[in-house]
Length: 406
Image (cartoon, rainbow, N blue to C red; front, side):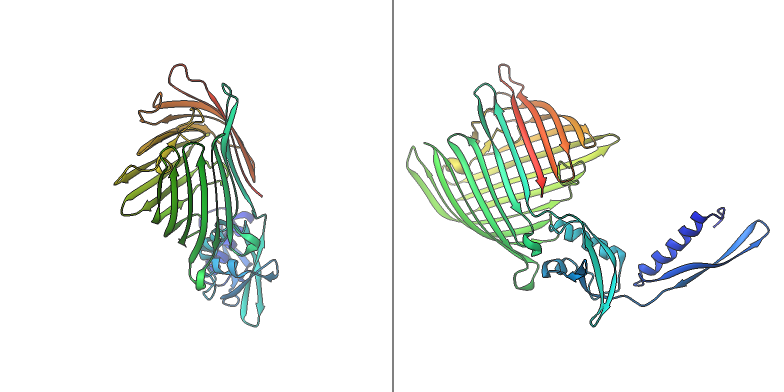
């Protein structure tokens, strides 16, 4: 009201009328101007709005074909209720988080059971690749981490993951897991997994587990289960085996998915038994400011045991993960914490710098620092970093990281 009449103003009025109808279950409404009467310097516009039928989606289809049961479960909060753009937007976000890719509503078709919401999908990721590696120029040794995961196999919601980490030539680990979604039609997912780790002349460990996960979205979940683990320290021939209760959760809202520039992450993981309690945690917050993205992250862990814990149960710090800038060998500690600060440019090409602080007496210095360059694409990102300890006489390390969805 009170604005100069223009084609843009008429379009705005029409969009508002259609939006009002759509939010009340009438997305097929039509609107048109049927008259405009002028009186002096004012005008009265008559807008004809035809609401059309009340749309209650009974099913969904993907580009005209029947949607998978996994995708339909993501829209459980939409089906059977009057159409709502807000509820539909939330369902689209859930589907994207579960690995179904970017989607949009392109229309409705009327079938025997009622209205079917027709979706169109863009590119979706079938495999996610995460990797981080470092090179020590003083020794010529390389080490790092690699993970392959399929978050949504054939659109079913089933997932699988395998990861491998090389701490040094004689210290490596491998693990894997499989997830079956919506057990007995409930929002509970069942995960089965296991892993094997060894450090020559130091220790060997084997673990298998199961856990039930309650997923609130594709990236936020709570889980609990049980694991069986066997560990052996090679120098002393000491063995430990037994069952643990495992529990934890993740609450995430980081965007974009490759080298995030905004959002938050909170996660925790615990292994509990009458003789040992081990808890690790991580949190991060990224805030864009003008042309910069700034971040703060913290991680740490606590370990309590009635007797001396095996080396494989201790926390291992150093290498490609914060604190960065240290040799491939690990420092084994019972409790530890690290705080990281960084800042870089927003955009596909982002130079950045960071500072890590870890008050652990085993380290030559609590501080390490460095900088690097990030290259970010829609489905692939690369990061190159030079990091070094603040302790005099320490040599720097080169880190290379890759993240991709394919």
